[in-house]
Image (cartoon, rainbow, N blue to C red; front, top):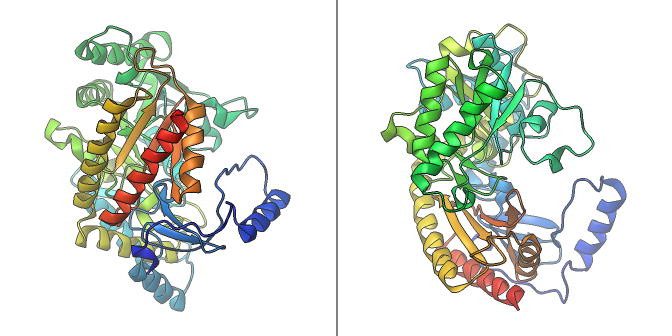
Amino acid sequence: MLGKALPRIITETLPGPKAKEILKRRSQVMPNAIGCMYPAVIKRGEGAMFEDVDGNYFLDWIGGVGVLNIGYSQPEVVEAVKAQADCFFHGMQNIVTHEGYIAVCEKICSITPVRGEKKKAFLANSGAEANENAVKIAKGFTKRDNIIVFSGAFHGRTLLTMTMTANKAYATGMGPMANGVYRAQFPYLYRKPAGMPEEDAIDYYINSLKEVFTEGIAPQYVAAIVVEPLQGEGGFIPAPIEWIKAIRKICDDYGIMMVVDEVQSGFCRTGKMFASEHWKDAGVQPDILSTAKSIAAGVPLCAIVASAEIMDSVPAGTVGGTFGGNALACAAALKTIEIMERDHLAERSAEIGATVMARYNEWKEKYECIGDVRGLGGMIGLEFVKDKKSKEPIPAMVKAIVLEAAQNGLMVENAGTYGNVIRFLAPLVITDEQLEEGLTILEAAIQKCME
């Protein structure tokens, strides 16, 4: 059974002969800008495993970059989509109401930790759409034109979200960028100013935001501050709670919407259904929350949720879209969330995370090239440096580790502003044996690339 199997490479080389031929075809018809360095072509997947067209078995710790929290091809989700397909594929909400859309919104409103007793939600297709719509809602409610985002942020590849994204490698040659987007420093504590105590560093990063009000845009013209609870592409960096509390207070003081991007961190990834639930004890809730990725186990869908007061302030016609809340996607989402709750995948994420963090911290003590280990639940970053004293990023080594691990049947991916972080995003249905095997393969890859 593939879902319980361990990595197995049977071809003499990777990619194997069939995969090599398909990858050649890919290069002829797909733009080079959609890069891929992995030597595999998927044939089928189950749980945390997939088989390629040559019969090799790979353990997937990328999961479609956080899309497959309940794993590949979950049978109950497959059946839910098939049942919906027997009825109809699609019904656009501007034209005809379908109950699946309403049921997903009801569920999302009941589980998301946004402010307000009465909430409303709507659906679109991708993380970028979720974030763009969240900004639209903030602007519609506040009647203001500007937003503030952070260093290290990734919010998407549309014009607006590409502007919001910090790393401009994602926007090469795409200027001019959208107007009204300002940037402050995110609290990347591993790389705080040298010698600065952590408690002082929090104030330092709070002041970075306040400086935007002085040097960039006055607060009364800011519609939203958009923040990831745990930065994804930026390097898997959790937002410190004291900093989050300060953001919430600033938003309250100036009537600014606190928008939380949970595209990657949502749906049990961090040990809670949503990462912003970790803020509950501090009394912090976002005004608007955007989420996508694992919401529908791989069928394109995203959700945006806020209080009814905020949501109903949006001018008619400014949100919506043809495929948002597609019936097949809604069927997948309802069953996916049911499984997450029933099978306690948030708790499983915390268990997996504890195992991985313990092993990673052992490696940190053992290897000079591992500078930092951080994360929440099953969303963990492993940062590589030339040495612990200089903290100089070493992205070439990370690339080599990624390729070496793939040759032995483990798929991992880099992240971080400098490309020197390996991210852990394994499906939460991974078995203990698969987890142990993956850790063994990864450590062997690290050791080999240190030689």
